[in-house]
Length: 160
Image (cartoon, rainbow, N blue to C red):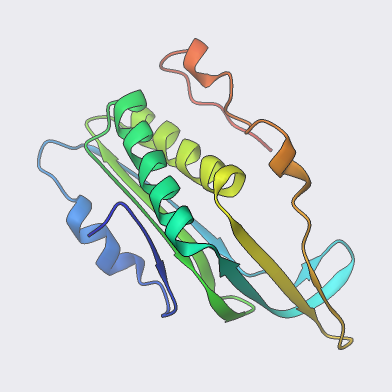
């Protein structure tokens, strides 16, 4: 399985987790991002993801390599949906296995933060009132939340 990939099909975490299993790994962490039913006061009925796939896959693979090297994890993967999604569907999945939980948690957080920050992926929300709009990513111009993590080894950061 590639480290990073897009899919138009529903994401199945149970299947994606299988290649990450490793008897040398005692820690596994995953992140699932679901389509929610509201955003900034608007009721959402669904959304669409579009991506510049060639560039995004290349950059996504680089993010996986960075996580493997930076956190010393054994395996990492990320799958992002493109196309139309309904409320409640899984839009993005990240999975990481490592010798210990701390590295797995930190690498998982790094991957999702970097994917959201660096990849050319766009989201268009469709609202219950019939309107729709492309969601601006205000965070894209800011550094990811984990930017200072490298300076603080072996510490799990919690962001609320």
